[in-house]
Length: 94
Length: 100
Image 1 (tube, rainbow over the protein chains, first blue to last red):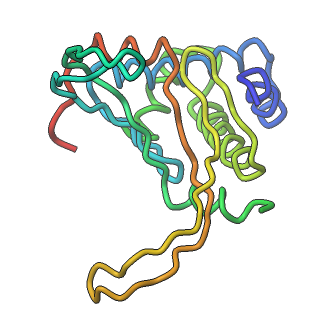
Image 2: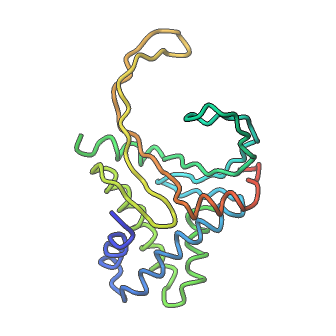
């Protein structure tokens, strides 16, 4: 499934211009990205939470060459699925 | 940011739509992703990331309270991988706020 498929489904439910629906779908993901960029967490009830975590710098090793490298401090994001989403994944056609 | 704050923000930027429309679209969006994952499909959103299902094998676990050994059955878990743009923006962005 791609964004185009998501737009298609949303378009079938609201039934306005597909171009407008596509804009709203884009805006949804853009708003989530903006919030995360600001270091906010995004909680979508019934779906899951997107959170940003700060990672301290640490010593790492290139697994291919064995060479030691420093991994700088950085921000990463994590997604934690809600129980509803977890259940949906486990009940569906396994 | 909560679901309703997300809806408010999107509504303020999408002039052609009422809040009600945006609510419907947002619900449909997350519902479609959920259903698609339920079918074991992968969802890819360019610039944002991809959702997929990972299999977890059965394993022997332990009840942390009683110390009793139990069988944990194999299961499937939803998984999200951030896309390149999202990763870069999060890394370049502000440090996470400590409060919830």
